[in-house]
Image (cartoon, rainbow, N blue to C red; front, side, top):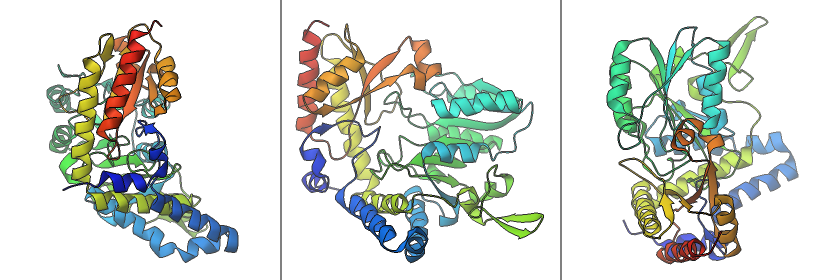
Length: 396
């Protein structure tokens, strides 16, 4: 499928003013998404928030269906949240974990997830075990199978694409191993949804969480989660309100049907409508076509950086995506970010505070993180490489 990159860039005018390479942080929304958010905010200002929510109830419900289409799931398996972290935490704390249960995690685990695991270890008494990486720097599937066969594992938590690099963990192989062992897989797909295919049956996950603001190009303050229908009744949501449950009598309640039991009443309606629009926008381009272009652009940037003397590329894994991390000998990554920003090239930095298990072991405190998207051009990649080459030649 041919992508009209120029048309996509016209839909996002800010991209015409700068080279934007921080889509793994917060990707600029296209105009149709922005217009839908603003339209609803104006309606709220005109008639009130409750009335505006009533007026768009059908469209808001359809956001579940759009996300279900994106993930190959049922609409009743989707919950709308205000962030990926909120989605992940709501899912994790709903598992009926008990003292002595083992939760397996990966070396590329994200800070929010890791903090929750540490807190559950302290308050619930679970045991947290970190799976080793294989020779490619990705989750060692053979080690996972061996540990699952040993028994006692209640949950596996894995990051599909980590915040600190271009690695794509072998989610499908991990999912197959977990299914064979009857152990749920909680997949953090925050950085993969929108840039790679994420059909839940192919990935084999039981729960998937993601955000709207990264590669889906939706508004900040939006997120979602998927819960496999067969798992729903095993979850016991920690947080309940009038959206997630009904107060039946003065001392009884009933959980909402489907994954809605993990939603909350108070939420950013305008943002969620924008999320729905961003999902439909991405589906209109085609997720496979997006993935092909993003992976190719990421590979070109990665190869070009590796050829510059003094530049170290830090991405791992057999499969890689549109996130590229690197350092320049003798240059602080934050300073490299600032120098590129002065030339209207916008990157970010990834540091160990967000990925302690991985980066501490690798002796990396910080890296420059550049993340391409379907709207990135070959010329922008070339210009970025020229600027990095120039920085690398200057004394620190």
